[in-house]
Length: 160
Image 1: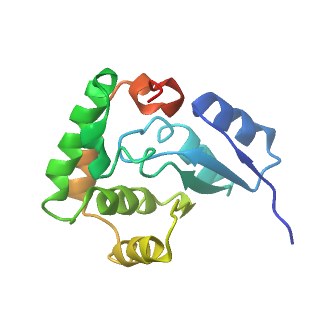
Image 2: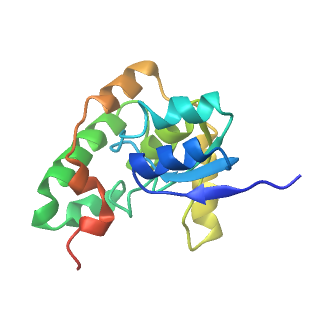
């Protein structure tokens, strides 16, 4: 059997694709700071048995040590990532670990894309996700961190 999917950005496009009823899976941008799709898209996808494939887990590198180099225009994003980094020092060892384990801990998520240039980086991601889901306490703490949607959309970031 073959499957068909769509790659969308944002809540409206994902909901439109789901409501068409022609897709077996959706590839969407979702991460530890961007929770816009949780209230409507995730439940609808789950009720329709549509698989969810996540991209942008690391938000173009912002959810790594590279957040320290974000430009001044992304100060709000930088502050939010710093808050995540403070959380990652307890239960998880790094921002990428927190990011992947948060995303893959969502029941509706079937898979997450890993962008890498080296096998060793892929091995690192596989190793950290094998640690399983993060605690409910950590998940709730992550949910409390709010960032303006414009800061979460790389298409609106200043060109560097």
